[in-house]
Length: 324
Ligand code: G3H
Ligand code: 13P
Ligand code: NA
Ligand code: ZN
Image (cartoon, rainbow, N blue to C red):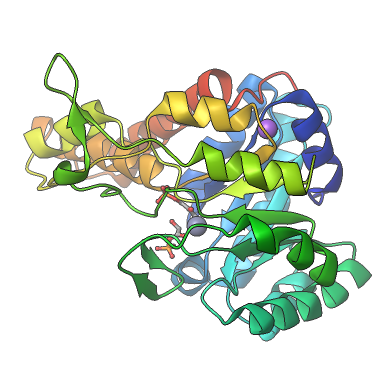
Protein backbone atom coordinates (compact mmCIF):
# COMPACT_ATOMS: atom_id res chain seq x y z
CA UNK A 1 0.00 0.00 0.00
CA UNK A 2 0.90 3.65 0.41
CA UNK A 3 3.94 4.41 2.59
CA UNK A 4 4.85 7.35 4.81
CA UNK A 5 7.98 9.44 4.25
CA UNK A 6 10.12 8.21 7.13
CA UNK A 7 12.43 5.70 5.45
CA UNK A 8 12.28 7.43 2.08
CA UNK A 9 13.59 10.72 3.54
CA UNK A 10 16.31 9.06 5.63
CA UNK A 11 17.62 7.35 2.47
CA UNK A 12 17.34 10.50 0.37
CA UNK A 13 19.26 12.64 2.87
CA UNK A 14 21.97 10.00 3.18
CA UNK A 15 22.11 9.47 -0.58
CA UNK A 16 22.21 13.16 -1.56
CA UNK A 17 19.05 13.23 -3.67
CA UNK A 18 15.48 14.49 -3.31
CA UNK A 19 12.10 12.79 -3.61
CA UNK A 20 9.75 14.41 -6.14
CA UNK A 21 6.47 15.74 -4.74
CA UNK A 22 4.09 16.32 -7.62
CA UNK A 23 0.57 17.70 -7.20
CA UNK A 24 -2.38 15.88 -8.72
CA UNK A 25 -6.01 16.84 -9.24
CA UNK A 26 -7.23 14.32 -11.81
CA UNK A 27 -6.64 10.92 -13.34
CA UNK A 28 -4.30 12.05 -16.11
CA UNK A 29 -1.94 13.80 -13.68
CA UNK A 30 -1.92 10.78 -11.39
CA UNK A 31 -1.18 8.44 -14.31
CA UNK A 32 1.65 10.66 -15.57
CA UNK A 33 3.25 10.81 -12.12
CA UNK A 34 3.07 7.05 -11.60
CA UNK A 35 4.26 6.30 -15.14
CA UNK A 36 7.26 8.61 -14.64
CA UNK A 37 8.10 7.10 -11.24
CA UNK A 38 7.87 3.55 -12.60
CA UNK A 39 9.88 4.33 -15.74
CA UNK A 40 12.68 5.85 -13.65
CA UNK A 41 12.39 3.47 -10.67
CA UNK A 42 11.89 6.41 -8.30
CA UNK A 43 9.98 6.79 -5.07
CA UNK A 44 7.33 9.50 -5.44
CA UNK A 45 5.03 11.72 -3.38
CA UNK A 46 1.55 12.30 -4.78
CA UNK A 47 0.37 15.50 -3.18
CA UNK A 48 -3.12 16.89 -2.84
CA UNK A 49 -3.85 20.53 -2.00
CA UNK A 50 -7.06 21.84 -0.43
CA UNK A 51 -7.90 23.15 -3.88
CA UNK A 52 -7.45 19.65 -5.31
CA UNK A 53 -9.82 18.24 -2.70
CA UNK A 54 -12.43 20.83 -3.62
CA UNK A 55 -11.92 20.25 -7.35
CA UNK A 56 -11.85 16.47 -7.46
CA UNK A 57 -13.64 15.25 -4.32
CA UNK A 58 -11.49 13.73 -1.59
CA UNK A 59 -13.04 10.27 -1.79
CA UNK A 60 -12.23 9.98 -5.47
CA UNK A 61 -8.70 11.27 -4.88
CA UNK A 62 -8.19 8.79 -2.09
CA UNK A 63 -9.20 5.79 -4.18
CA UNK A 64 -7.19 7.10 -7.10
CA UNK A 65 -4.08 7.31 -4.92
CA UNK A 66 -4.64 3.83 -3.48
CA UNK A 67 -5.21 2.61 -7.02
CA UNK A 68 -1.92 4.25 -7.97
CA UNK A 69 -0.03 1.58 -6.05
CA UNK A 70 -1.80 -1.21 -7.97
CA UNK A 71 -1.34 0.74 -11.19
CA UNK A 72 2.43 0.98 -10.58
CA UNK A 73 2.56 -2.81 -10.08
CA UNK A 74 0.62 -3.35 -13.31
CA UNK A 75 3.21 -1.17 -15.04
CA UNK A 76 5.89 -3.58 -13.87
CA UNK A 77 7.14 -2.05 -10.62
CA UNK A 78 7.47 -4.77 -7.99
CA UNK A 79 7.71 -2.58 -4.89
CA UNK A 80 6.37 0.90 -5.58
CA UNK A 81 7.14 3.54 -2.94
CA UNK A 82 4.23 5.96 -3.18
CA UNK A 83 3.21 8.52 -0.53
CA UNK A 84 -0.19 10.24 -0.46
CA UNK A 85 0.51 13.62 1.09
CA UNK A 86 -1.67 16.57 2.06
CA UNK A 87 -0.09 19.74 0.66
CA UNK A 88 -0.45 22.92 2.77
CA UNK A 89 -2.88 21.64 5.39
CA UNK A 90 -4.17 24.64 7.32
CA UNK A 91 -5.91 23.10 10.33
CA UNK A 92 -5.87 20.14 12.71
CA UNK A 93 -9.36 19.19 11.48
CA UNK A 94 -8.25 19.00 7.84
CA UNK A 95 -5.17 16.93 8.73
CA UNK A 96 -7.28 14.56 10.85
CA UNK A 97 -9.80 14.15 8.05
CA UNK A 98 -7.05 13.31 5.56
CA UNK A 99 -5.43 10.85 7.96
CA UNK A 100 -8.80 9.13 8.43
CA UNK A 101 -9.09 9.04 4.63
CA UNK A 102 -5.86 7.09 4.30
CA UNK A 103 -3.25 9.78 3.59
CA UNK A 104 0.18 8.54 4.67
CA UNK A 105 1.70 12.00 5.18
CA UNK A 106 0.40 15.51 5.89
CA UNK A 107 1.75 19.02 5.88
CA UNK A 108 0.56 21.43 8.52
CA UNK A 109 1.48 24.88 7.28
CA UNK A 110 1.48 27.21 10.25
CA UNK A 111 4.21 29.33 8.71
CA UNK A 112 2.24 32.58 8.71
CA UNK A 113 1.10 32.20 12.31
CA UNK A 114 3.04 33.74 15.18
CA UNK A 115 5.89 31.35 16.08
CA UNK A 116 4.35 29.97 19.28
CA UNK A 117 1.02 29.28 17.54
CA UNK A 118 2.83 27.52 14.69
CA UNK A 119 4.60 25.33 17.27
CA UNK A 120 1.37 24.55 19.15
CA UNK A 121 -0.66 23.70 16.03
CA UNK A 122 2.11 21.63 14.46
CA UNK A 123 2.64 19.69 17.71
CA UNK A 124 -1.09 18.80 17.87
CA UNK A 125 -1.01 17.50 14.29
CA UNK A 126 2.15 15.48 14.99
CA UNK A 127 0.59 13.83 18.05
CA UNK A 128 -2.47 12.74 16.07
CA UNK A 129 -0.53 11.77 12.94
CA UNK A 130 2.17 9.72 14.65
CA UNK A 131 -0.49 7.71 16.49
CA UNK A 132 -1.65 6.68 13.00
CA UNK A 133 1.83 6.05 11.51
CA UNK A 134 1.49 9.17 9.39
CA UNK A 135 4.46 11.54 8.93
CA UNK A 136 4.22 15.33 9.23
CA UNK A 137 5.85 18.23 7.39
CA UNK A 138 5.94 21.60 9.15
CA UNK A 139 7.07 24.96 7.82
CA UNK A 140 9.13 27.86 9.14
CA UNK A 141 9.52 31.06 7.12
CA UNK A 142 7.14 32.51 4.55
CA UNK A 143 7.48 32.24 0.77
CA UNK A 144 6.74 35.39 -1.22
CA UNK A 145 3.55 35.24 -3.27
CA UNK A 146 0.42 33.24 -2.62
CA UNK A 147 0.74 30.32 -0.21
CA UNK A 148 -2.20 28.69 1.49
CA UNK A 149 -4.56 31.55 0.56
CA UNK A 150 -2.21 33.99 2.27
CA UNK A 151 -0.38 36.48 0.06
CA UNK A 152 3.05 37.75 1.12
CA UNK A 153 4.79 40.67 -0.60
CA UNK A 154 8.30 39.53 0.33
CA UNK A 155 10.10 36.36 1.38
CA UNK A 156 10.51 35.95 5.10
CA UNK A 157 13.52 33.66 5.08
CA UNK A 158 13.63 30.86 7.60
CA UNK A 159 15.45 31.96 10.74
CA UNK A 160 18.17 29.34 11.41
CA UNK A 161 18.06 30.18 15.12
CA UNK A 162 14.48 28.85 15.32
CA UNK A 163 14.88 25.44 13.72
CA UNK A 164 16.25 23.40 16.62
CA UNK A 165 13.52 24.66 18.94
CA UNK A 166 10.81 24.06 16.30
CA UNK A 167 11.70 20.50 15.37
CA UNK A 168 12.33 19.55 19.00
CA UNK A 169 9.09 21.01 20.37
CA UNK A 170 6.85 19.80 17.53
CA UNK A 171 8.36 16.42 16.66
CA UNK A 172 7.86 17.01 12.91
CA UNK A 173 9.41 14.56 10.45
CA UNK A 174 10.46 17.19 7.92
CA UNK A 175 10.74 20.97 7.69
CA UNK A 176 9.79 23.20 4.77
CA UNK A 177 11.95 26.32 4.60
CA UNK A 178 11.98 29.65 2.82
CA UNK A 179 15.25 30.42 0.97
CA UNK A 180 13.96 32.26 -2.09
CA UNK A 181 11.59 29.89 -3.88
CA UNK A 182 7.92 30.81 -4.34
CA UNK A 183 4.74 29.32 -5.77
CA UNK A 184 3.48 29.77 -9.32
CA UNK A 185 5.03 30.65 -12.69
CA UNK A 186 6.16 34.21 -11.85
CA UNK A 187 8.79 33.72 -9.20
CA UNK A 188 10.87 36.79 -10.02
CA UNK A 189 10.25 40.05 -11.83
CA UNK A 190 12.66 40.84 -14.70
CA UNK A 191 13.92 43.71 -12.53
CA UNK A 192 15.08 41.20 -9.93
CA UNK A 193 17.07 39.29 -12.58
CA UNK A 194 20.31 39.92 -14.42
CA UNK A 195 21.03 38.96 -18.05
CA UNK A 196 23.62 36.49 -19.32
CA UNK A 197 25.77 36.96 -22.44
CA UNK A 198 22.85 35.81 -24.63
CA UNK A 199 20.41 38.22 -23.04
CA UNK A 200 18.61 35.44 -21.16
CA UNK A 201 17.22 36.46 -17.77
CA UNK A 202 19.09 34.94 -14.81
CA UNK A 203 17.17 34.96 -11.51
CA UNK A 204 18.89 35.78 -8.21
CA UNK A 205 20.31 32.63 -6.56
CA UNK A 206 18.57 30.82 -3.73
CA UNK A 207 19.92 31.58 -0.25
CA UNK A 208 22.20 28.56 0.11
CA UNK A 209 23.91 30.37 2.98
CA UNK A 210 20.68 30.08 4.99
CA UNK A 211 20.23 26.43 3.99
CA UNK A 212 23.79 25.71 5.16
CA UNK A 213 23.15 27.43 8.49
CA UNK A 214 19.99 25.35 8.94
CA UNK A 215 21.88 22.15 8.12
CA UNK A 216 24.49 23.03 10.75
CA UNK A 217 21.80 23.36 13.41
CA UNK A 218 19.90 20.18 12.52
CA UNK A 219 22.38 17.91 10.69
CA UNK A 220 20.69 15.29 8.53
CA UNK A 221 17.18 16.52 9.31
CA UNK A 222 14.90 16.24 6.23
CA UNK A 223 14.37 19.64 4.58
CA UNK A 224 11.61 20.44 2.04
CA UNK A 225 11.57 23.01 -0.74
CA UNK A 226 8.22 24.30 -1.97
CA UNK A 227 7.81 26.49 -5.03
CA UNK A 228 10.49 24.65 -7.00
CA UNK A 229 9.19 24.79 -10.56
CA UNK A 230 11.75 25.88 -13.13
CA UNK A 231 9.18 27.28 -15.59
CA UNK A 232 10.66 25.77 -18.79
CA UNK A 233 10.85 28.51 -21.37
CA UNK A 234 10.05 26.14 -24.26
CA UNK A 235 6.69 25.35 -22.63
CA UNK A 236 6.01 29.04 -22.04
CA UNK A 237 6.88 29.77 -25.68
CA UNK A 238 4.55 27.01 -26.96
CA UNK A 239 1.70 28.28 -24.80
CA UNK A 240 2.17 31.84 -26.01
CA UNK A 241 2.64 30.75 -29.64
CA UNK A 242 -0.78 29.10 -29.56
CA UNK A 243 -2.75 31.93 -28.01
CA UNK A 244 -1.56 31.95 -24.40
CA UNK A 245 -0.72 35.11 -22.51
CA UNK A 246 1.96 34.26 -19.97
CA UNK A 247 3.99 37.34 -19.11
CA UNK A 248 7.39 37.33 -17.38
CA UNK A 249 7.11 33.67 -16.42
CA UNK A 250 10.35 32.84 -14.56
CA UNK A 251 11.27 29.89 -12.34
CA UNK A 252 14.12 28.40 -10.32
CA UNK A 253 17.04 27.30 -12.54
CA UNK A 254 17.46 23.53 -12.48
CA UNK A 255 21.13 23.87 -11.56
CA UNK A 256 20.08 25.41 -8.23
CA UNK A 257 17.65 22.57 -7.57
CA UNK A 258 20.38 20.01 -8.33
CA UNK A 259 22.54 21.68 -5.71
CA UNK A 260 19.66 21.69 -3.22
CA UNK A 261 18.87 18.02 -3.89
CA UNK A 262 22.46 17.07 -3.04
CA UNK A 263 22.01 18.65 0.42
CA UNK A 264 19.62 17.72 3.26
CA UNK A 265 16.79 18.90 1.00
CA UNK A 266 14.98 15.60 0.45
CA UNK A 267 11.57 16.68 -0.94
CA UNK A 268 11.13 19.10 -3.82
CA UNK A 269 7.62 20.32 -4.70
CA UNK A 270 6.74 20.83 -8.34
CA UNK A 271 3.28 21.72 -9.63
CA UNK A 272 3.48 24.70 -11.97
CA UNK A 273 5.87 23.01 -14.44
CA UNK A 274 3.34 20.22 -14.88
CA UNK A 275 0.56 22.75 -15.46
CA UNK A 276 2.70 24.38 -18.15
CA UNK A 277 3.46 21.06 -19.85
CA UNK A 278 -0.21 20.06 -19.99
CA UNK A 279 -1.36 23.47 -21.14
CA UNK A 280 1.30 23.67 -23.86
CA UNK A 281 0.32 20.24 -25.22
CA UNK A 282 -3.40 21.01 -25.18
CA UNK A 283 -3.04 24.46 -26.73
CA UNK A 284 -0.89 23.05 -29.52
CA UNK A 285 -3.48 20.41 -30.37
CA UNK A 286 -6.39 22.85 -30.24
CA UNK A 287 -4.51 25.17 -32.60
CA UNK A 288 -3.14 22.56 -35.02
CA UNK A 289 -6.06 20.09 -35.03
CA UNK A 290 -9.12 22.30 -34.67
CA UNK A 291 -11.49 19.53 -35.78
CA UNK A 292 -10.51 17.33 -32.82
CA UNK A 293 -13.15 17.11 -30.09
CA UNK A 294 -12.44 13.82 -28.31
CA UNK A 295 -10.94 14.74 -24.89
CA UNK A 296 -8.69 11.67 -25.08
CA UNK A 297 -7.02 13.20 -28.15
CA UNK A 298 -5.77 16.19 -26.19
CA UNK A 299 -5.66 14.90 -22.60
CA UNK A 300 -3.68 11.85 -23.79
CA UNK A 301 -0.84 13.87 -25.35
CA UNK A 302 -0.96 16.25 -22.36
CA UNK A 303 -0.47 13.24 -20.09
CA UNK A 304 2.44 11.98 -22.22
CA UNK A 305 4.10 15.38 -22.09
CA UNK A 306 3.63 15.53 -18.32
CA UNK A 307 5.15 12.08 -17.89
CA UNK A 308 8.17 13.07 -19.96
CA UNK A 309 8.68 16.26 -17.94
CA UNK A 310 8.44 14.43 -14.61
CA UNK A 311 10.77 11.62 -15.71
CA UNK A 312 13.30 14.26 -16.76
CA UNK A 313 13.04 16.02 -13.37
CA UNK A 314 13.60 12.72 -11.58
CA UNK A 315 16.59 11.67 -13.68
CA UNK A 316 18.30 14.98 -14.34
CA UNK A 317 17.40 17.27 -11.45
CA UNK A 318 16.30 15.46 -8.28
CA UNK A 319 18.50 12.39 -8.68
CA UNK A 320 15.89 9.95 -7.33
CA UNK A 321 16.01 7.54 -10.28
CA UNK A 322 16.95 3.92 -9.50
CA UNK A 323 16.38 4.41 -5.76
CA UNK A 324 13.62 1.84 -5.26
O1 G3H B 1 1.00 25.12 -3.17
C1 G3H B 1 0.43 25.25 -4.25
C2 G3H B 1 0.25 24.08 -5.15
O2 G3H B 1 0.81 24.40 -6.41
C3 G3H B 1 -1.20 23.69 -5.24
O3 G3H B 1 -1.94 24.68 -5.89
O4 G3H B 1 -3.78 25.21 -4.29
O5 G3H B 1 -4.00 25.74 -6.74
O6 G3H B 1 -4.08 23.36 -5.94
P1 G3H B 1 -3.55 24.75 -5.70
P1 13P C 1 5.48 25.45 -7.87
O1 13P C 1 4.35 26.43 -8.03
O2 13P C 1 6.79 26.13 -8.00
O3 13P C 1 5.34 24.29 -8.78
O4 13P C 1 5.41 24.89 -6.36
C1 13P C 1 4.50 23.89 -5.99
C2 13P C 1 4.39 23.71 -4.51
O5 13P C 1 5.19 24.17 -3.71
C3 13P C 1 3.25 22.90 -4.03
O6 13P C 1 3.18 22.89 -2.62
NA1 NA D 1 18.98 15.64 -0.58
ZN1 ZN E 1 3.83 24.65 -1.62
